[in-house]
Length: 295
Ligand code: NDP
Image (cartoon, rainbow, N blue to C red; front, top):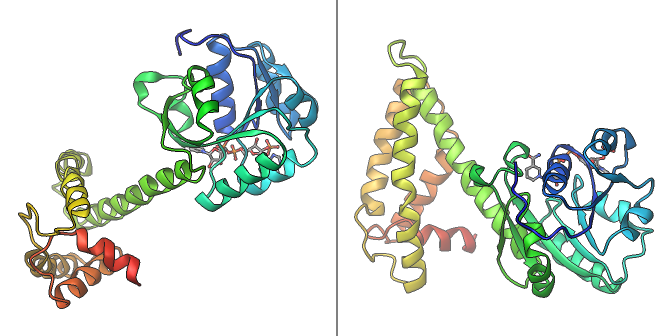
């Protein structure tokens, strides 16, 4: 579990779902005095033996510490749970998943209540919490002084990455990475579907090739980033859109041969074709970023 590398700042945690419970255990293991509250009180009971103090109401939980971490289901549950609590002078760190607009609005809401506010987007699943080598981390954005003051405490459950004073930026970084992951999973699903009828290729053997290939291709993101910054979408292109679009026909024909519906790849391929039709066949993929934003 986590080593005792942070000064034991007292804190309050609201929410003991799967993620909240994992967070609580990490702070308790690191020796932080912890007050917890959960709507369903039974979920707090196992933590008492680990040293948690259980508050019967949100108001009492918030009153127990200056640093209040919130990890509830969604933004609506945060508003509901904290509606009657006295937040003046508190440091609110909201780890509840929200949209950037919700996070910005929640920051204004906190400011109106004379509280400092930091939003967080957790890039980890509960078993990764409190285990540094698992590689999980949390994006933080909002009040920089709050982040600096509590950096060590916030770094106990998972690494802490501050991404700016705009309170919406943690959520935006979180969702951008999850969106990229979703597209990757679509590709993985399609690839397994192509291989599925082949009795002599075990999915476990194929998975190794798949992950090696995806890791190698992921570096393409750096090239796209350089093109987006320079504005020259032909810079360093080794696989241009015209070539890739021609290759897509082979991907589509193979899907048909293997009896696989192309619905997961079709929208992306259509965007590539559209960009080529607009005369940008010599570019890489960066121009698709503009195409998406023009729709
Ligand atoms: P759970 O569904 O396990 O827990 C939800 C928590 O929210 C419970 O404590 C629940 O209380 C509470 N809650 C729901 N509605 C209300 C309400 N109206 N008022 C008060 N409390 C309420 O979710 P997780 O713990 O897994 O997730 C919590 C947050 O962490 C979410 O925003 C999620 O997106 C985020 N997250 C989760 C990850 C995961 O893998 N689990 C990964 C990354 C982020 P009760 O026990 O009474 O139902």
